Length: 178
Image 1 (cartoon, helix red, strand yellow):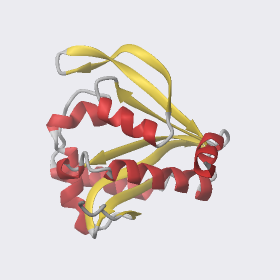
Image 2 (cartoon, one colour):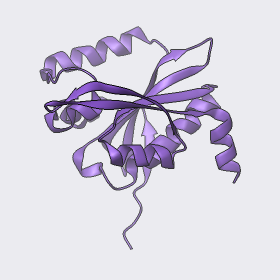
Image 3 (cartoon, rainbow, N blue to C red):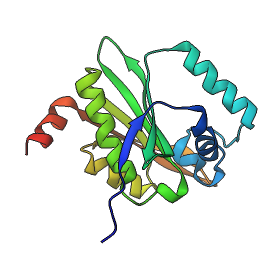
Image 4 (cartoon, helix red, strand yellow):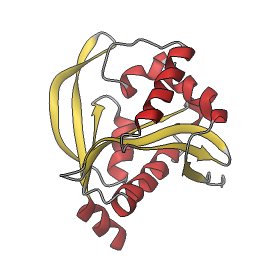
């Protein structure tokens, strides 16, 4: 039986930039990660956006997904509403990290951090309907489908539904108690 990878969330370092840029430049998975028209940024432009985001320090929660000392992705909660205590989560992985349970484990750690440490009450996300693997992973983490925006996303030559999923802190806590 293969060893389960050791997944941790940690701050980004300069050594992670190659792995993270490889995700940003992956045209094959663009629509799974971005709502807009595919447009791969240059490395310089991408790095300047990262630096600008860091400088803003807007309260977003942002982590590198690390497996056994190597950066394999990014996960974060953004657009946090400090009054209503909710935010949107996003996750992206390098191709070799996909399909190995790494994203599911990273999401579990992110939810714990968001609910316990950041005192958020609700986390939501959006995913294109054809990304069935991601939807299953989100359901494993406790997310439920809250709705659909029909034919909302243009994906590789046709319109697709955008699925909205969410989880409340009370649902997350109940699932941990079981």
